[in-house]
Length: 263
Ligand code: 48F
Image (cartoon, rainbow, N blue to C red; front, top):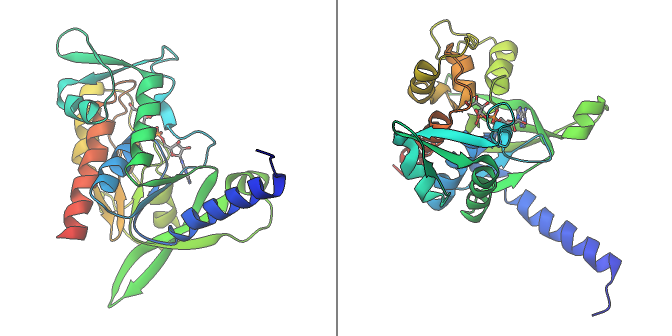
């Protein structure tokens, strides 16, 4: 076969265009491809929900690749084992009800299962803002504002594009970027005890894990929060390299949104 550079380029552009156009109006737009949103994306896709994830970095996976302090193993507790089995990740029984997994296999498997479920992941796209609407007296988040990450990093003067979503999930990890944007720009109260992003506390694995899952919820009409972003928004402790809470948070988001969308 004689290769044609123009056809290679045309194939890529046409295929990407199709993915991008199918993501302009979706049921769920998830910000950040960390473990919580990847798990959410996997279950949403499996349920036939139109979902898309935007990740600002080159590689999806967030903070899961590096394990604990670059020891590339992660730990989970018994409660999250069913999710690991669903995702077909190899695991080893450790001591006292804990399990360990290779962080490279875990992260790559979650990414792969998420994409194969039908949820599209776009990398190198930074979410810089939300679409905000007021209908029948209710203010709500109604979509996302997107810019190429390098354009954003370089501070180039380029206008972004907007996409519509019935629901948005802030899975941006420690910074809770989307909650902060809504709170700062829109002069509204979030569904947190202070009405604002409270800020993350120091490390306490046991409390942090429970807190993550409990506070995985709608934080403002149309805006849900998952993973470490939930700890930051609601003011809970960080938990370090145990990932069960992140996986359970992602599953909870998917379950809540599937119920809401499908009734
Ligand atoms: O931080 P991250 O892995 O999120 P998570 O799912 O998991 C947290 C754990 O990795 C770990 C932990 C567990 O014990 O504490 O930290 O809550 O991934 C968040 C992803 O969001 C991307 C960011 O690059 C990362 O990959 N991200 C952040 N802000 C934006 C964004 C943005 N504005 N637009 C697009 N992506």
